[in-house]
Length: 233
Image (cartoon, rainbow, N blue to C red):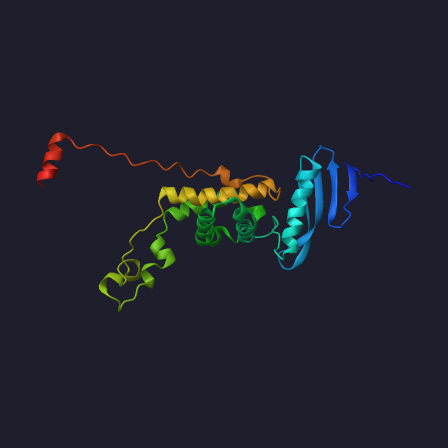
């Protein structure tokens, strides 16, 4: 006797996958939902749900998560930290989408700025205000002080390699440029955009933050008299 797919309230075309990895069914709103258990942070198992316009799309998303889980890589969830999510995104998503040099720059940006600044926040609770406050603070932080650049110089080294600014109380005010801040912001937006596509979070809060478009500096040309004075000085 052949039986058709069972149905539940709010769903249709529900069936258990033959390999036992999960279920896939069509929702009332027409989208397809696939669900299954994957390895989560803390060596636990967590049921995840993914969605797609077609059954094939939803199933492909679930298959990808299960494959990642089977490799021993914990799949981050919205309740996990932003640091855990960014690490997962770099190692399992961005690495397949970016050129090697770009991925290296993204990794440096994440490890040097994003994780130290926002990593402890839960992905689900990250707000636009958090991002804005952090970026505004980053504008005024001397990177030489923050990263201990001058402090790593040796007092007994040759003159050109001795501490000369922040380590001896003379802050060099080495601030990040507007272009660098915009780049850091763009990396965060890219990471969160993937979380939105995976439906881990409802919206990309980084898109609600404006860093300002870096503008090229404008210079006023010298007058003829100023040019002659400059050349004879």
